[in-house]
Length: 225
Image (cartoon, rainbow, N blue to C red; front, side):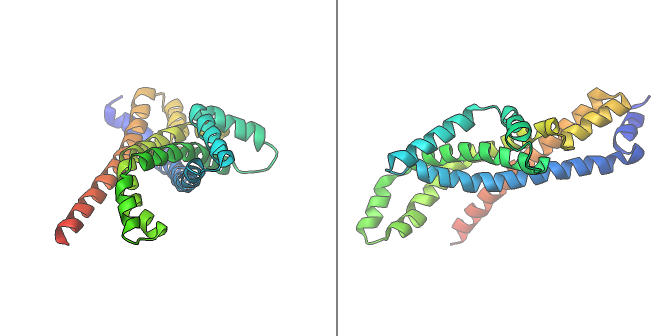
């Protein structure tokens, strides 16, 4: 069996390419929704973590510690087969919620670290010049926080893409499960799984490319102003 025959069996025969695209679409949906929800929730948790109120700060600290220290797969199994077992929630919904929780803990911690590393002297100078607290945060502190947090946030996004590969454990037919099914059908696990890995790698480099593009656009905007 030639390599072209193997590729035909894996990618074309029986409409395999449609199945792969379907699994990829499920993966992308879970990834995007979890990222958006997790980022918003992470910002809220970070706000709680930086408050002077010891109760809020304590709740946020425990939240971050537990979710960052819990394997994503174990959390997914706990929520799907335990917490939400009788609620009738769809597996995809539970998966999105699971990954959003995990991402939020990482985002909250990276934002808190970035906030601590920002130059407070500039913020104090802005307040001295008459800037309001909101304007100081929006114009001085926030740009610094985003710049400092950006590399770690990029890694968090790529990690999320990889984490989604475990959703097959809760009956979701995502990209990984589709690749596994095709490998079993064609009896070509090495080539099929390699193709799946390349697809995940492509998704990761799309993220890297988008971040690099945003950096170039900012540099161009600064040079033209």
